[in-house]
Length: 215
Image (cartoon, rainbow, N blue to C red; front, side, top):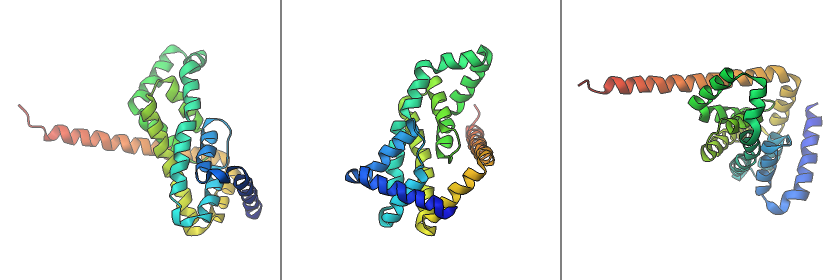
């Protein structure tokens, strides 16, 4: 099965070389933009192929891919901004919607960055849609997507550099075999990260308040 997945990667790589070779590493950015905006593309496999062919400059592909993802993710973001509120209000009552908006307003940057760092099949586009619905500012939104995707793609690139591209095929195969479990684990990791970050922020705030001299 791993050899079959790896053969798919080779086919993808051949197609990419034919279509995107004139664009160089910017082709990764184009594919990442498509993946973040609409069509699901196996970006981990694609980045693995590019990194393996140019291991000396492996860092370029995660960064360019993250730039493309930040641009492409504007599509679900603006869909959410233009009509998402109406869609949500059709499915949840006004009080529930207000609670959802309040939670997102408190943790909006992490609510985008953490899902952007999660591997498939984590539903990142839903969070991008939600960011548009709850009117997150565009530049912080794009920065959050860029940071999250950079973390994800850089992890893929480092795995390829140290273990070879087959390790990515193995991970993809394992994730597909246990899609529901992978989704639950990704959600748990995302939730744990958000809780940990908020705990650190509150602790620092309390420490700052304790150091302020009383009048």
